[in-house]
Every structure is written in structure tokens, then in C-alpha cells.
Image (tube, rainbow, N blue to C red):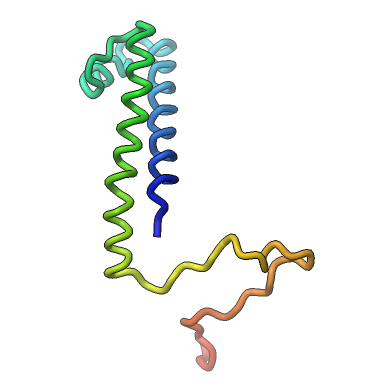
Length: 117
């Protein structure tokens, strides 16, 4: 199961960082390779190379990413509950962080024990 808050924040930050990379690319790349037209088409009220446009584009990009997480996670979790396989192991269990190191790996439920190659 996915944590909706965590995935939404991660996708929001990913989209915001991607926006900054696109703006930097637009500043260093030749005019023919700019993302200016795409950004102005996808981000309402965004204007190229203004402080207001940059801040608005950054906020809108973050919100688009967060929206994707808010929509995707409930869909994924519902499908996982309905059609999901075996539960995933807890990656943060206390036994993995013991002083003696991690526990030895246990055989899988789908073990091939008793079969010859």
C-alpha cells in the first residue's frame, strides 16, 4: 500500500525540480530548444522570464505533481487490495537494525525446494 501523503509530496517536489531544470535549460540552450512554449501552454498565467511567472510556475508544477499523487495512490491502493499478491515485507522492522546485523534471508513462499534444475 502506498502512503498518499508521501507519494504526493515526492511527485510535487519532482515536478517542481523538473520545472526549475526546464527554466535553467531555457536560459542556457539555444532558442530553438527552449521549453518556453510548452511551459506557457501547460501552466496557466505563466510568463517566461519574470519573477512572478517563475514563482507561479514553480507553485503550479508542485501542485500538478501533488495532484498526480493524490489521484494515483487511492487508485493503486484500491487495485492492490482487490488484485494484489502477497503482502510486502516490512522494511523497517527492528530485527533488521539489530547489533548482530540483519537476519538471514528466509526461503520464499514460492521456494523451489525439492525440485532439480
